[in-house]
Length: 557
Image (cartoon, rainbow, N blue to C red; front, side, top):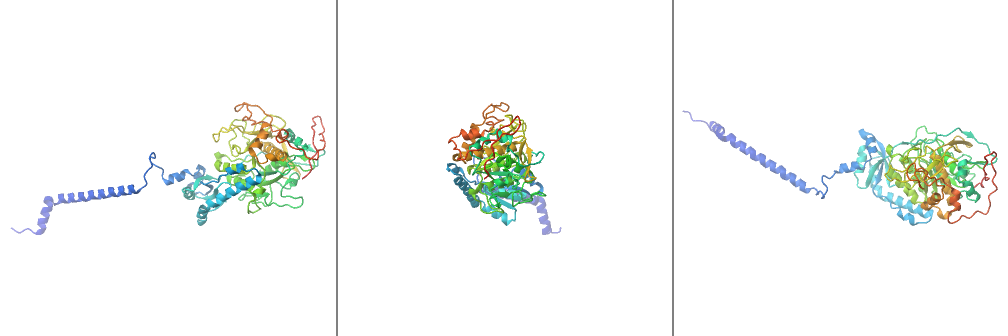
């Protein structure tokens, strides 16, 4: 028998038990590998921060950042789209100290410096990040925020920063502004004609005391102003009777319009619709030739265009509020809070349903109030149902919101929006007060002697702006004391009861405190106003069976 080879011996051993031993060896190796993986995983887990007690499954950083981004921004940056949005910083200025200051100059300087310093000390890292990536942006200070144009990735990166509170949209808002009636070219009127709404608020009786709004400045935030209009030009702060100087008196926040009749960045006041000229005329207008269309013809006006033929954005609105807080020269430059207006007229809105950043706008409105600027705002034209005061700025406590009466009566206009305010859950009573708002005759933008009529809470609002100018002219100690001044008009208004939208009041959610009576506010105020040395001439009645006394025009400024 042949001797078996070594190969046959190995083959036999493998066949008789070697395969089983190999399986055991392979299993042991797998077991060691599994233990190693488990130990490695446990080691990594132990190196992570512990979850605080009571916080199961904490959100990831990405989820937390996404929660800072408004739904409008998420929608408009989907699929690689770019859009404009506000980066609102977490660190906002504390303006509470302004309440302890007495004069407008003190309040304005304090608020301006506080806001500007806060933005300059906190925005630097974000601005550098944006510059490094060549991302389009604009810095604001009235709210510590930066307007950015970018993608979802840009929004996500900014939202992930701990110094950013939230990302809010900058949507384009269409304002359904009142439409003008037929345009008339006015000839000099003899005797002078005072408009019915001016009479019904008893402004002429205040003029008779010598108070026409002297030393008060009213600002228009609207579609612009035709500054050369005969009833407006003499009252423009930028006109000295011979030369126009638009620095500190005009700003245009429309930078990207297409085919606008005023263009973009107009270096002088221009009205692309008619609305701004009309509302400014109701506040201060008088052509000196018989067209007495304004409540406070002795006051001055300045302006900022914040709507492109009625289309606004939060950025445009905020830019104008920033200009009013500290006006600056045409083209930009250092702001000067001593040149801020006393009162502003606002007939624009910013619906949150369209993506408006209500919180940011509220901060800007409250900053103006802290600086002693009275912001008068239309309640809007969504009546007659209750809870139709739904949009900023009319919903804010810091805005003096105005309802519209059918001119010559104490009946609310059907279009006038009503409270209570449910949009922000406050159930706040709005409007605050009411004024004539139908068939109002005032300036048109079509010519320097052109006039037209319009109806809306936009027309009621400048009646109150002008009334406040008369109050502050007659009672300088109340100037820039916002709460006391609103109380003076509210408490002397002709109270009109209504249970249509809640308690009869006053105030109530239809008329607010009622129809403004500026003569009662001035003559019944404390301290008592002192008439000027020059008595007013005897009024001239208008011919006809329904004639009313008409004071002759006050001396031209």
